[in-house]
Amino acid sequence: MNGSLGGALGPVRGSWSPRACFLLTQSRAFTLALIQLLRLYLDGAGPGEASGWMAGLADPVVAPALRAMHARPAHAWTVAELAGVAAVSRSTLAARFKQAIGQGPMDYLTGWRIELAAHRLRRGDETVAAIAREVGYGSEGALSNAFKRITGASPRDYRRAASPRSTPAQAEGP
Image (cartoon, rainbow, N blue to C red):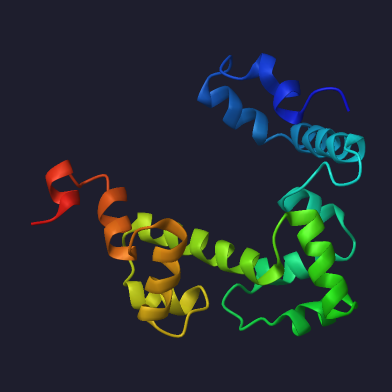
């Protein structure tokens, strides 16, 4: 494939107003064109060239597991259960997931849960304990440990730094 998806969109980047982009995304024609563009991108990539979430959705083995994780992120998924959803062995799912996504299914799930938690933390209207339950962690401490391992900050520090109301002095603490 010549170029990349970013290269294909380069000429329009920055040339439209936010309102024009919003109106465009509301049209069915845009949605269909975007789907076609993504298909061309995925079809044009050679074996092993496309990776990430979109490549996973294009893989008939990985896609069912991805959809299940995204539909129920708080579920206590195991590789065996995800392999059952995909109707393959655990080793087949693990290998295909790594090939398509670039990481194993459990690492992907952890990252997805942390993204969901970070989004909720930025909203700022839920307790860390409630967020932990919503994204699949049995306790606030379990979420805090995983969140800090992935992001380098505790959920409370992340929330404080992401808060639009915080000032640099508030973000650093007392």
